[in-house]
Image (cartoon, rainbow, N blue to C red; front, side):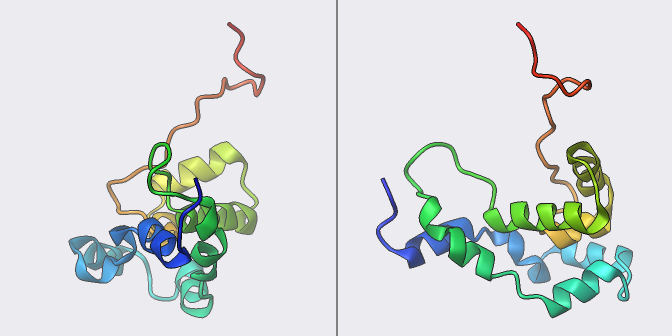
Length: 126
């Protein structure tokens, strides 16, 4: 069942996680992610808010489990492209590298879901 209004969808998928300015974690990130880091410059230059607006109609609050914020997912894929990383490498970078975690909009204590694929890249048998 699609959402009735785009503003409702937009409010639902915009988690409080994006308001880093008022949290303890913002202070932590300010200390640990250098001001001249490439990702800080990209974040200051590019407005990624268009992502939430574009995918708003694809998400509904009363169907299924809550999803990851599409903005976080988009930024992770952006990082993967920027640094030319495999799926496993981007997962590792976002979980371990505070600059990547900051850019994606994750709190320092939060991790992306771990991949459940076998290491050989083939689908799991049985």
